[in-house]
Length: 199
Image (cartoon, rainbow, N blue to C red):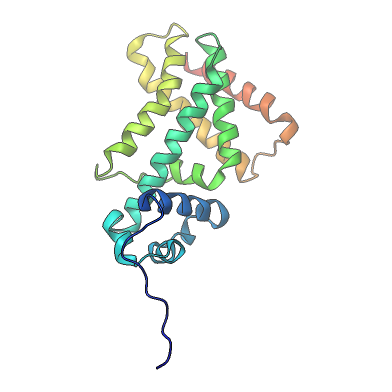
């Protein structure tokens, strides 16, 4: 009898399968981009039957939502570390913005997924929305520290972050040529211009 392909396990016996799949998908994302992510290939990598994967992630969108959620959580942690010890207002906003840029430079494909087409258009992934809001609170708190009227903070934060994402995207795509040595000073100047324009 000819040997067939190895039978896949239906269960994952080496830890948490959803976590293992998310970590594997994030590695694929950074190495080869979002198109390289396939539920069947991730199942093969984990050594499980693809049905086991679909029990946790019924379709690719649900996996991408979890990856984006993880990215926003990681970004939120980075931003909070960046502003530790910084005075409220402009210094905190600049520090957070530099932290945002550094995160994007280290994880460009994750950054593009997080800031690309909105994944949660139908409201099916509330944990993703919560992670986004939690991360962006850092910028809202920064604007509150500038003395801005409270009713303007949310709108100004949204415009600031969108502008920041746009500038960072242009740098990552090399449409804006910024040398690594000058990146911190460049981002500082950009942030100050944006803050001044939004006051």
